[in-house]
Image (cartoon, rainbow, N blue to C red; front, top):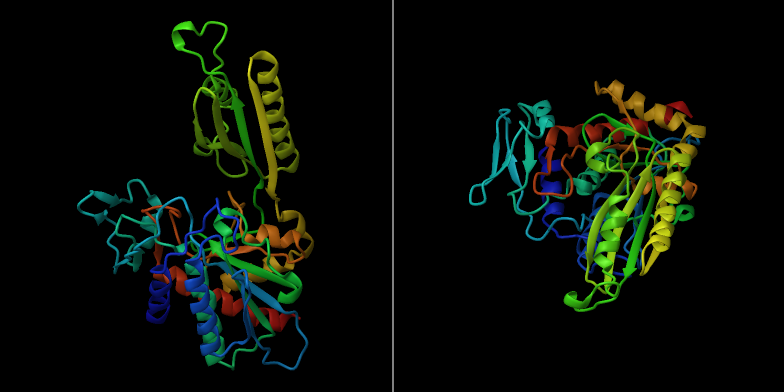
Length: 408
């Protein structure tokens, strides 16, 4: 566990935040720092065919150590972190033998990680937790996954008695802004299937995710002195807030769970002349997903008909539910499930309320379920990861490689 911890701490202290407003790949120059480090580290531990392309995608090979022909499988993680919360100056803290009580992250700001609010903490009583200092996110999403994959490959290289086929690994930039798989060369990767190590709590095994779209709605108004505005002023802010109020009030992230979809407004800004609203649309069911998009189109059309001004909707799909691509090869889920059970881990098979690189990769010809990486409370100052969960994730990767060699 010390080797896993040391590796993880090295990775998270490098700021790799991605930027949704950049057209570059990687979207930020600072992602190259960790990408180049990983490139050298993979060569140093003994992997072959290590590549780092001009867009920051890293691939490497662990050669087969058996004579039999078995499918090439892969493991994928992303090394960027979310733009939602700062990742500059990450200063992780180690909480050994967690006692189940409140953890004071930052005394000056009185920032507390409490099991009274984050009940999952109590699962890890007695374990070693890695937490933030309350001023940044941690970066376990998904540097925990990167750590686990590198550590598993290093372990397999050191233990040739564990028989396995050819293993490919891939690390991507910009997953947090929905572009992690955009330039992933599936053909060059050359795996029959893969697993993203990008889930949360120990035991998670996921092959369903949201269908996803994003929308930008712009309202144009007319500015007139408010004292003389009757029948003249058109307030773009009023138009946008009227539209927002017509969305289903119960179908938002904070009031939904499981397979329930939602509309999520994440940015609202403007003036009398021009106002803008940005939102995402999510649903696991393809039919309901299409219905949600039509509802938004109908609301915009109704506003344009009822009120003066001009409202413009721009909407595009982001990714789709990978269940459609994984179910025909469901044995790849069963292998991961068997690996967990053999290690005493209870598989938690459930839909992802989000997306991973695997959702896009599955539609690109690389079926790709998602496995736990161990972290909790992603994208914020309350993020933490139990070291024991990371160790178990390494063991799951090793066991999947071993089982695949035995079954084919």
